[in-house]
Amino acid sequence: MNTITDNQVIETLQKLHQAAKDDHVSRSQQKQKAAEQGIAFNRSWATAYMAVSPEQGDFLHFLVTVSKAKTIVEFGCSFGISTIYLAAAARDNKGSVITTDLEPNKVAGARKNIDDAGLGDTVTILQGNATQTLSSVDGFIDFLFLDGAKELYLPVLQMLQPKLSKGAIIVADNADHEGARSFVEHLLHAQSEYTSVQLFENRMLAACVK
Ligand SMILES: C[S@@+](CC[C@H](N)C(=O)[O-])C[C@H]1O[C@@H](n2cnc3c(N)ncnc32)[C@H](O)[C@@H]1O
Image (tube, rainbow, N blue to C red):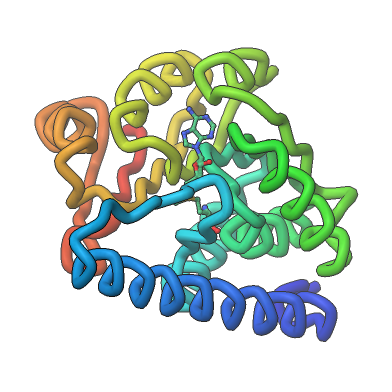
């Protein structure tokens, strides 16, 4: 099976990437206008997509596929774009994805989008703070994608670390952000525990549990 080539998946991803792009352009214009008027820009992260690019999505799909990961955990699904890439590979591996987001409207949007892609039975979405929702994950984790609040990358990794299987892959987006610094330094220094690589001009960090 190659779920990522399924028409339902392709069409849903195309539609969502376009919506994410439009959202980004509109926010940039609002930000510029606010700066010109000397007023504060309301970021309203609760509705922003802030999604992975198609190339990063393909990379996540590739890694889940080649690693044959079955239990995939994601921190920060937003409207479900990255989750669809992860879930398409998870389905082919006969695995599943557990994801989480703070924002109820994003959880509802992600659920609809994942259903539109035909992947609803492969994904569990938990609404709430990842430090709580992901603490209930059962069994071993084969793949961990971190894409929520950067300051929580290290605490979430440390919380889930005992559940990571040998050979588990960890990928973090926005690893070049200041908030992710302690996480990046932790992984790059713990060379006896992880093999790590920085990618996409340091925006992504991928690591593998030794
Ligand atoms: C960069 S976006 C995720 C984008 C998504 N992975 C994608 O590619 O489509 C980050 C998301 O993390 C969520 N988030 C931030 N802090 C969180 C927390 N403590 N627990 C759960 N979700 C959180 C935000 O609501 C936001 O939707």
